[in-house]
Length: 237
Image (cartoon, rainbow, N blue to C red; front, side, top):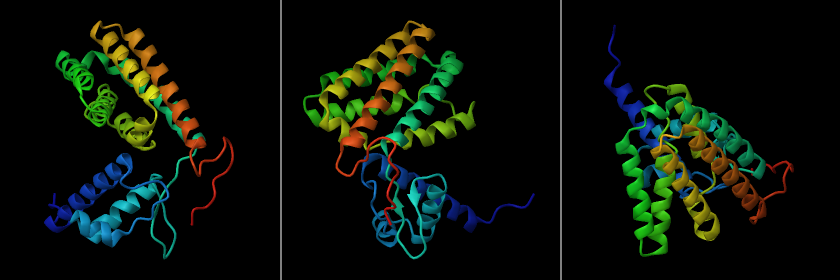
């Protein structure tokens, strides 16, 4: 079988790096909803190259992250409250299925690592460090029951759904009650897993995802530029 040329492999690697960098920028709020993506500027800032960055933008546009139009810079798609409700409804179905299917593969060391994140959040001295620790716990916890090696299709779908959400750090920083409640729900899920009570863990997980989606959708609709439930989006271009 002929080997793939090294130049093509390097281009694919750079495009993959650019894809991950773009996704992280959206997740953290470095790229905000409605922002235009200046590809040449980002390529220079990230030291990636314009061609792999453009390829990554096209890939992300194909799965819904960007809006593309001829002769215009790509725009980060803005999620509506209805978008968020749909995303979180899908997450509830798929994550609960994934947890029930794969919970026996969760190792004690995984639970111990997440328990350490809980303690780190409790011990944090500043609000910013506390938020960062809780955000890290959220990200790690929801990856715990998904195995790209054993369930690649499920992992791929959930990876996209986990990224398609508002800038959580911004939301969490502005709503302390939601932060505290979500953190307590994470601890309840972990406690059920440590007891090997899968029914309770799935029940707690479903409640947590459903509630988070509802709260985030309402906050999105109340934010400046948000739109009421069911109202169609304006074309940002």
